[in-house]
Length: 438
Image 1 (cartoon, rainbow, N blue to C red):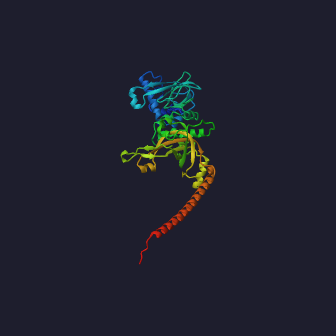
Image 2 (cartoon, rainbow, N blue to C red; image 1 turned 30 degrees about the horizontal axis):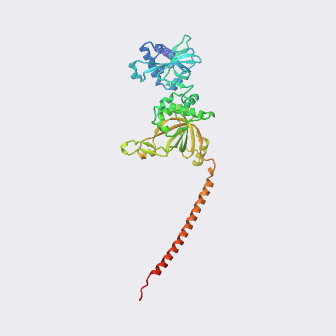
Image 3 (cartoon, one colour; image 1 turned 90 degrees about the vertical axis):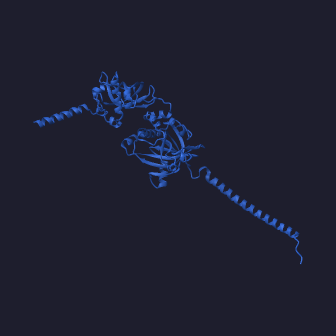
């Protein structure tokens, strides 16, 4: 009997536990927070409540977005601690300083409170970061947890680890285009801070979602004309150009098909591969000098005439695929291929990577512009006789033959003149020479 009672108590305990941790509850992700403690965080009338609110957001920052997204549910009315997502129009934003004693531990100094108008009504979002360029009327969204309910039992206030921004108008055409293509433009501010670094795990969200957005933009037929900056500007003003819509003419050197194995990145990209095109651009007479890793080992490494640039794209156009097949005899993973192309796309950032040339020069890692392509245009000659190459060749060959004949005739005439002059000189000398007598 005691055994049966213990079993019933255990089963009852499990039922209670699962009733508290609902399918759409994220309480188990917040470590130490229950509904009562979350309820006490709003409104943050004192340092303890404000500190706990900051801690909720801090814990959410360490939670993978997929884990939080799997907790999204349809429960109505909502409950404190439920995972929710909101999208709406920004009405107002304010900064709220957190207690100084928490700044060193949490690694942020303030919270941002954003008032948002959604289709269901007004709501408020707390987060530790906010896009500095966001303006009233822009569309923002957040994925987080409920921390306050209204009188109707609908959630009213939420805490989110970060805010996504999709501008209604933007200073940069590229940002505007990306926002309209459902790309989170707030990711670009972090990209700028990683200039001249290799691709890192922190690049993942921006890198793959930007490539997917650029691919969608490439399918559009009414895109604005891209800027055509001088290639050296990509080196001089790289941090200002992140997200800019631009066009570059370049010559391909190597094309590589890269497999994406991580499910999360496959989902963001919409497929399990992408292409990297290593190319060179014309420097337009500018000389680029890069200091060696050890300055005492020699003078800077110099690039004249051309500079390396990298392009990533979800797909390469058919004309490149056909040329690679013709060159390699099939679909090669890596192809050393040269074609003149024009790339319309978005500047990502300067990135660093190892290159054989820089290793030979002792200059450390190579760094260069990384472009996310939306469209690639073929600039290679479209006929077997571009610009009358055969006619030009015929004239060149004729000129060479005429030159050879002229040189031969000139040599013959010179030889005849030389012989005639020599004979006349000998005759004159013979006339003046006094032969000895016996």
